[in-house]
Length: 157
Image 1 (cartoon, helix red, strand yellow):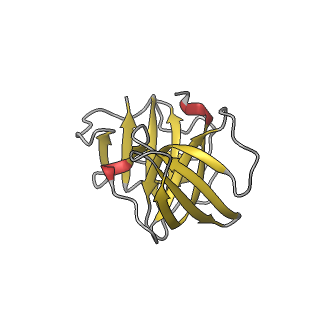
Image 2 (image 1 turned 120 degrees about the vertical axis):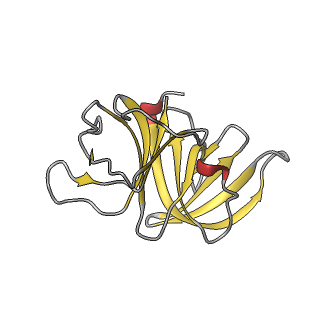
Image 3 (image 1 turned 135 degrees about the vertical axis):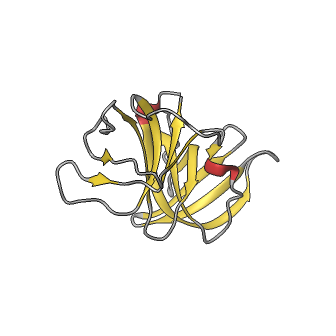
């Protein structure tokens, strides 16, 4: 999967129904721009393997290079999903050795309290630069680029 083509959509889960088979689900998410439907199946990475439920705030990432049906509401296959807190944001991006996002939209300041782990939940003992990272954060500075001390970082080695 080309990580650089993933597009995030954040909203609240309104409805979950069975997909085309017993291993998939259709999740309706209410976003600021309306409703978006996501297929979630066994190939979807869900942070912490959380069981998604109605009312949860979630950020789902879909592959912007894949074809989608021209229907309303839009339907995408979720490549990744993460449950977020009320004031929390999730970013998935490549971060360089200085922990600056590839699109220069965020600079990370890792603190002792920041949980850094691999995608399978193991502790990551190295500096997380030069990797794709899923970053959970709430506040940023008003500097350019904005800086944050994330609550949690998931490293995709």
